[in-house]
Amino acid sequence: MTIPYRKILDHIRLAFPQPVSDRVHDSYLVHSIMRAVDAVDGLKSERPILGERTHLDYAAAKTRHLPEQGSTVESLTQELVEYCSGLTLWGHPRTQQNVVPPVTISSLIGVLLSSLYNPNLAWDEYSHRVALAEVEVAAMMARLVKYDPERATGFFTFGGTGTTLYGVKVGIEKALPGAMEHGVREDVVIFASDESHYCRYNIAGWLGVGAKNLVTIPTTPTNAMDTGILRNEAVRCLKAGKKIGAIVATLGTTDAFGLDDLRSLVFLRDELVQNFGLPYRPHIHADAVIGWAWSVFTDYSFEENPLGFRPRTVRALAGVCQSIRDLSVADSIGIDFHKPGFAPYISSMVLMKKKEDLGLLQRPPEQMPYLYQFGDHRPGMYTLETSRPGTGVLAALANLKLFGKEGLRVILGHLVEMAQLLREHLESHACTTVLNRDNFGPVTLFRAYPDGVDTFQVKEKEMHDSAYRESLLIHNQYNRDIFEFIHREGMAGRGVMLSLTDCYRRTEYGEPVVALKSFIMSPFVDESHVEMVVKKVLEAREMLGGKG
Ligand SMILES: *Cc1c(COP(=O)(O)O)cnc(C)c1O
Image 1: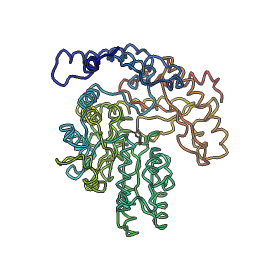
Image 2 (image 1 turned 120 degrees about the vertical axis):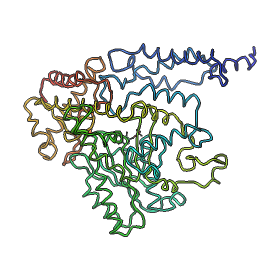
Image 3 (image 1 turned 90 degrees about the vertical axis):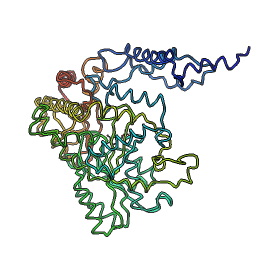
Image 4 (image 1 turned 30 degrees about the horizontal axis):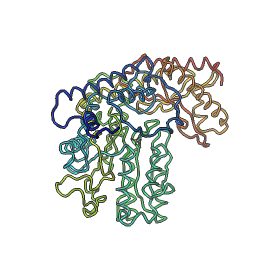
């Protein structure tokens, strides 16, 4: 039997939003979305996950093939919803796992609109006012970090990794003019701290620099790059005839919210240019994908404290501002709205202090015959990506306007307030110790110890004294066991979901320090959830018999 294709096409057409206004069909579209949202709601409970976590059968997944016949929007909605089962609810007050944010309704609408009408930011011919939105966000961010908005420029890219990739790429072009054309044919080094994000390895590898030309600089006990060591390494590389591709500073490291001292890095860079008579200025990229949001506090009056934060919070926020206010000295900055910007993945922007720097990446128009024949806003002429979606742009713009500076201060201030409260609680118990005590972010790294360990001294001893190697390793395992207990309890809806870091830092004698990690990102976290963390740690100790 044959079915004329036209009959099937009629069905297929119904599955698209209608190109010409059709109110009846619009309500079908909205209703379909509503049914999906409603069905997911049915998966919610007291627990910080949707539905159930079941065994993931990858073998069965590999047996799938493209179905012969299609399906309907209705039955597919139900199928798609099932894929949400087991996902973590980042906004749940019992979730304190990592720097993954819950997302706002406005940012979702931004994503939805952009997905519905599918603009392509490569060229304003294909994105029109969404291209304008990208320029607006860049202008807001340039002003926020105190770049000259006339000279600066910014655009969205594929994640925080992409922002650092752009920064380093521009740096390589400065150090090795024409690398875009001729390739990287000399040794060029990239500096970053040992607490910087591991994407540095990818970037060095993918840009043809080679991971062996990545120079990882140790950090001080406060998790900031040791500028003395950087100086020695930079001098050593320059004396060996190598070029400096980029210095990557991290403002807000992923594990401990460490903050590099940008001003010292710039001072050092300028000194190297002088002393070595360098024909280029080594590029300094600030990986501020987490820290950027704290810029909203650089003009907050900590003295008057109009939002009424607790004194400890005020001190913490002011502490972050000491470093964050220097962002404008960096040559480029990476910003993730999908971290402390409460937008869905992917929403990341790279800001360039001087728009001319992008000229280093520009391709000649002859290489792109099918695009960019007219118009003057054509980011696709210098971006790595060809197609770039508008989703991240509208999500970011939505949140920046939804919160405003005040809203961002309130939400970040609350996260820091909760983290500070957690630290107070942890410090008040003899059996727990906070590792990143001098740090001011929303992440707390801590360790628990069995009875009889002097937690006032053990931290220092384990860090510096190799005679404590065995004790350190035993306590690493002890904290893993505590984590296992808390995780099981959290999954069962009792307690809080934390995470574990296998290596908060290395000790002086080279062993990793395992730590429990609380990263507070949900505006729904309150005092009771912070107290619950401590309660669960104590319960876990009880369960382990208090002994190591
Ligand atoms: C998360 C993170 C990155 C990577 O960002 P993606 O958006 O995941 O690509 C880079 N640097 C730091 C400091 C990060 O925390």
